[in-house]
Length: 146
View 1 (cartoon, rainbow, N blue to C red):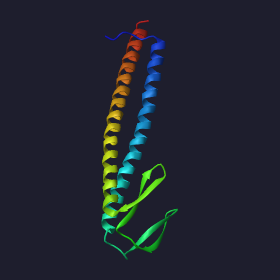
View 2: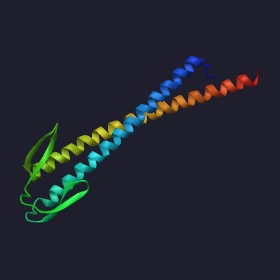
View 3: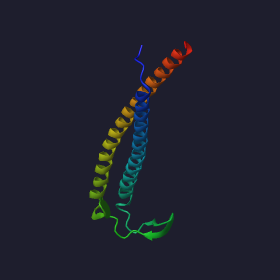
């Protein structure tokens, strides 16, 4: 049988539960953002490969607000890649693809770590819920005898 917690201990348990729950929600949001980034890297890498030898081909170019214009590809052997912090670099299509693949691999490792963190938080939340349920049942049993 578990030791009965005081009201103060129960409040602390609830606060800890809420903190873990909030952290889990934040981690879940980060996981979603990372998944989107991985998809974008994969999509960009595939596009660089597909367009590498497509000089003169026509493509839709996004201009914002979900709008596109028709354009002809003038240089399909070069690409401009965002390096982060507002810096971009022009490089060969092969180097751009390699850069995107490398970024995707790094993001995938981060995603794995975030998934482990989320699993750990879920276990902690579940353990607190189990303990809180035991405490509530013990209190109800004690009150039944009063």
